[in-house]
Figure 1: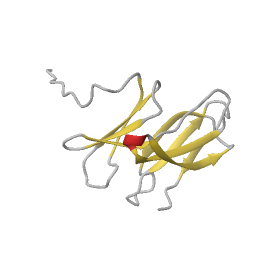
Figure 2: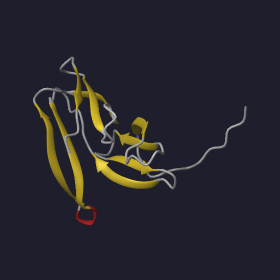
Figure 3: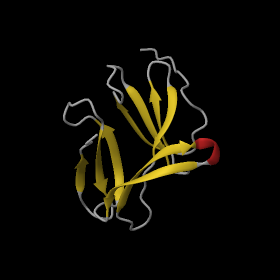
Figure 4: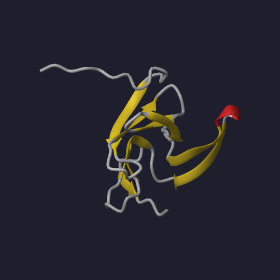
Length: 124
């Protein structure tokens, strides 16, 4: 077997999580990558791997919140914070995918400090 590598992004520091899913419903698999040193997750849109900074969430010690941050103005480092779970999940791992086949991406996360697994259905 022979493989050929394709560089998608060489600016991410300390990549921690990686997932593959059809984020925008176009039938092509996209890539989501998270970083432990930056509060940023990136969605790389197939087929040209355009980078979108769309999701930030995190686990900080014994915290029990899950937040979604969307960029408002990247030049001024402004983000809109949306609370997904306030007090019920200390995120250990997270996956973003369409759980119920309705064309919208959902969040599935496990709680490191809370000892649970939750599915957050996208209502929009």
